[in-house]
Structures are given as structure tokens and as C-alpha cells.
Length: 329
Image 1 (tube, rainbow, N blue to C red):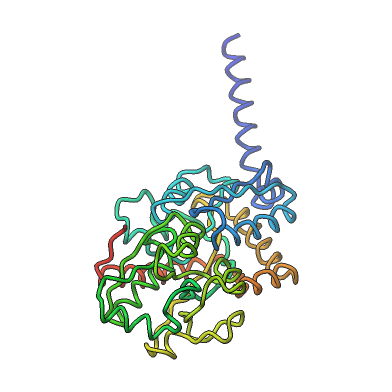
Image 2: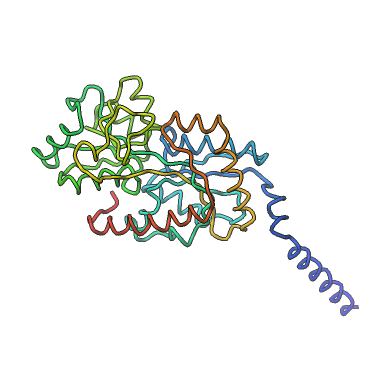
């Protein structure tokens, strides 16, 4: 009797194993998603990363037929959010929205539980954007050269708001600029672009480095004044604002980007499905118009291309961070 029961149990176990094995990559993709998706953001609500994550979350939710919940986990240069997703179930239901500060995080914070290249599966690049240098409307600085002149005359006196701390493109752009221009300005870290802009608008800091998607409304209402952008060419959304390279530092260029990652062990079929849906969303005229209004050039492309960008930027930012001796604030 016991042998018969054991045989039946073994037969059932084998059938279950075969059934699981029979789940082809197509089946994985077809059954996904089976529950709401969480899109984790490493910054406080109201900032550029949060705004774009919500835009993409809404588009993905409609395409996938499931709710996409944006989960803000700010702090430590977005490494709290990144560490959380690094250990999340690799089933495609927990995703990470990253900015171009992500590749430099492991150089600024050496004791992290993740590797920027190995721990995550790249899904897609969402878009690219300049960093814009802004000051409050009441600031005495009318142009970017005046900021540099003041910084040279009084080293360490000027300060700037860093949304997300040191591991962000905006703060790294500021540090690269300080190095190339040979000036000293103090970084004041905040948990995200939103709190950093609030401090800047209140006159608590001298200047800010931000992405147009969050700074633009304040520039348009005259509460902030844009002095320069960090890309090689002028921004389409701020065409009257000169580049840093034009004004003071020929060849200077820092371009911000945004993208979506999944835990590394996520089934390739799910990653492919997400990549297709992100590309489809970015092709929608309404989404393109919204991105362009925020000063973001729509991204897209393959997961492999996005992964190569991350690998290249990890080396580039890592080398620069070590060369400049930057430390997390």
C-alpha cells in the first residue's frame, strides 16, 4: 500500500515538474502580469524622476491591463529604492525606475547589496534630458558667468541644492562642473528634486542643478531663472538658454537619462514584453508630447542597448568619481 502511494506521489510530482517545464517563454509573457505592478522610485514625489515614472506607469498599466503603483522610497541617493528592488521577487511585478545617476551609485556608496550591471535586467531607456542650472528670481546672478566669478572670488561660500544626494546626474553634473571650472561650491543634499526645488524657491540655497521636467514650471512662471544647460546642444524646450560649453567650458557635456530595470533573474520573455510595451508607449503621440513638454527626448530601443549604456556609464562615472575623490553626502 505504501509503495502504491509513493508511486502515485512520484507520478504527481513528475507531472507537476513537466507542467512547469512546459511553461514556454511565450506562456510566461502571456500570463504576465497576474497582479498589480510596483514601479519603485528612489526620489520624493514631485521631482523629475517621480513625474516621469508616473507618466510611464500610467501608459504601461493601460497596455498591460494591470494597475502600476508608483512606490517612492527616497534617500541615500536612490540606493534605498535600488537595494529594495535588488532583492525583490524576479517575476516582473516589481520594477525600478532609474536615472543616469544610477551607474555611479556603487562608486559613491561602496557597501551596497547590488552591482549596477549584474544585479538587474535592463528593460528600456525612457528618455534623455539636459541638466539645467537655475537660481531663484531674486538672485543677484543674471547669467552663468556671474556664478563662476562669485565662486572664484569666495571659494566655498556658494551652495547648491542636490536632489537625491550625491548619486544623481544633477549633483554629478555640478561636481564635474566644479572640477572643470576649478571652483568650490558646497553641496546641500535633499531627498529628491521636489524638496530641493522647494528649498531653492525659498531662497535657502544659492542655485540648483535640475532636470527641466521638474524645474520648467517654475522657470515659466518666473520663479526660477535658467542660466545654462549641460548638454552639448541647447535644449529644445529652453532654446534661449545657452550651454555651459558655449559660456565657459568648451567640450563640457552631461546628459541625464531615465529608464526601467527589473531584477536580474526576471524571465527574458517578461523583460521582452515590458520592453515592447515601453517602446509602444513612447511611440504614442500623447506620450511624446508630454515628454517633450517636460524637456525630455523620448528614448526606447532594445534592452541590450540600454544595458550597454549602463555598463559604459558605470565605468565613466566610476572613473570620474574616483578621480575627483567624491564621497556620498
